[in-house]
Amino acid sequence: MTDPISFVGLITSLLLPWLLGSIWTYWLLCKSGRWNIFVILGHGYLAGLFITTVIIRLWNLAGIPLHFWGLTTTVLVLAVCGLFAIRFKRPCVAIAQRSHTLKQWEIAVITALLVLIAYRYITIAQEIALRPLFPWDAWSQWAPKAIVWYNNKEVTPFVDLGPWLAQKDAAYHYINTWNYPLTVPLIQLWGMLGAGTSDHTLIYLPWLLVILSLGLAVYGHLRLSGPCILKATLACYFLLNMPYINVHTALAGYADIWLATAFGLATFALHEWKETRQWSYGILSVFFAIACIQLKGPGIILGVVVISVISIYLIKFSFKTYMGLGLALIGAFAYALVNGIQIDIPLLGTLALTKELVQLPHLGTFAITYHPVHAVFLNSLFDMLNWNMLWYLLALIAVLKIIRVEFSTTPTPLLVSILFVMLLYAFVFSFTGNYVYAEIGTLQNRVLIYLMPSVVFYIFVTTTVRNFR
Image (cartoon, rainbow, N blue to C red; front, top):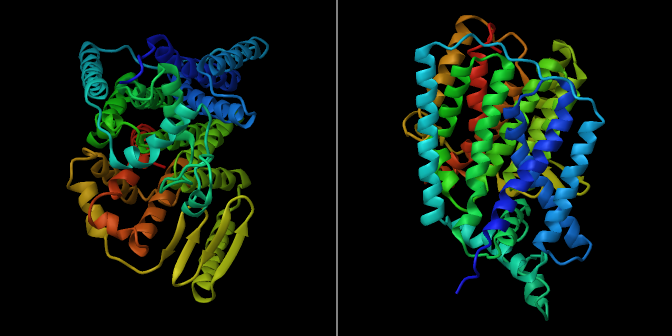
């Protein structure tokens, strides 16, 4: 028999972090004048939830039992502090986005798109509430942590098999992925604490809200960057209607939609930072890069990519210097393949590279052997229906760039981030044992989902500005 659900606690757990994140996002961006309500709400949901998980960790470190209304009071106090901080900051008025008067046919199209989005996500909400899909990884690896923590009222450590077998009490627990990042199970735990039960479908509503907040962020950032209301709405529909996005919204407990959102928000902020050099957007980008690292193993790569791209554009080397650094990097890589290197990185672990293997901190050791899986990826991108027409549009943009001889221009950090991640994917699936997961079709689309928000945003921004970048 399951515990009765507290709807007051559930609603509080859903809305209070959104309020917290939106307040502090507004505080961060309000002086820039480069903001709108959609940007604030779009970034606010994941920002607030991530801060809430940090609060849960701090409570646990202090040895205080996890009590929902006590944690809620802490979150609420932090939100009130944000309101006082805004009061003393004297925010600037948001820059009005220029837009022509909408014609009747444009209003009709926008309305139709919004109705379709609403209908799609009402049906997904029904799926979550009535018959949620519990994927194997979540059921066997992610959710058990949250359930253990909910019952123990503390973030009980999970350890490797050896220490778990050697212990004499129940101070530790074991699961195969014992060292996975804690943020997604903590999000589940927060919903369980609010609902007062660990066994109810409604605790997975954050999977619905996070993708809707991502849609708000896409719209808001596109409006800041120039696209009209119709084009920004079309971009939201384009992203939110993707079959694979829809599937992962309904997959209760999976981490992929969270990582896609975090990386998308980081790159949106990165684009705005490059366009305006507003330090607030640089901070926001780094914040979500850190969130990527805390969400899932592959998020380490995504977070490092964002921080690396910011560093590259901060330094402002000349083209010749970049070319020299690129050649030096290629030379260092070739040297490592021939002679091997091993670097011990404090707090992270060992980074090693030889012609036989590569070892990445927190990600594992992989044997290096070439595997021709390009046909599988091309099939995923251009033949299956997971991404609608997305990759055809991206290929068309690349062709137009070649025709207009625009590859010589300096690429935007948004494009550089996308290309870096795609090159890393190509290496991981072509030269390591992960090729098996690509061949059987279980992983390549799950990692491509992380790029979808950034790619959609890039397509609609690129086709709006005069010069493709």
